[in-house]
Amino acid sequence: MPSTTMDAIQKLYEVCKVSLSEKGPPSSEAIDKVRVVLDKITPSDVGLECEAQAARVWRSPQALSKKRVFPSSPAIRYRHIYECKSFSIGIFCIPASSIIPLHNHPGMTVLSKVLYGTVHVKSYDWIDKAEPLNLLKVRPAKVVRDGEMSAPCGAMVLHPEEGGNIHAFKAITPCAILDILTPPYSSEAGRHCSYFRRCPKSDPSGVLLNRTKGSEFVWLEEYQPRDSFVIRRDLYTGPALEL
Image (cartoon, rainbow, N blue to C red; front, side):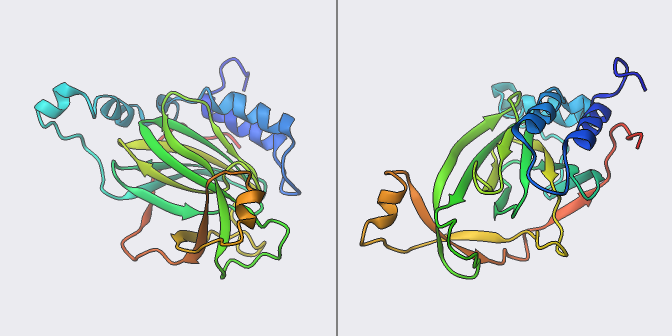
């Protein structure tokens, strides 16, 4: 298929295929190649233009005054596009006020693109990286990001040990986030998703405060989200890939 006529999502697949590998973290050059294509993806490229239009007027005075209700599901939905040993591509569709709790991507690089809507992102990196990994204990983490992202905007890149690998999403408006994970989750390879929550703990020695150079830090512990937290797998209705 000539590149001039190739669908946007097909272009994204092709650049991921040649740039990403299961053997290790991608180079900065590889990430840049993927990011350039990812940043150009629009809701219409993945069959979400109607949802994007609803999100654009969701907080408008006209919509609120008319108490207009836009069609949406109360459940967080994941639309799977593609997965191989090197990467996966999928879209999270999140209703307003819904939350994806703090979770990690161990050994993985993540590119996240907000396709439509506004989402609040809170992300952390572990402080004690040099210590043996033990997710069952309380561990200190520093705040990397705490703010809103609104479409259109550039993709957010999370590296295995920096950039906010542990993060949570709260939808301010209905929103959709296109995620590229490299390599993807794999229980067999030790890359499974863990969830975390903040817990009270003090640092009387001030050692951590010095190590983070005054940055805000918190204590996180692994936990199991409530049964009410469900991400439903939804049907992807955008253009099909030519593999």
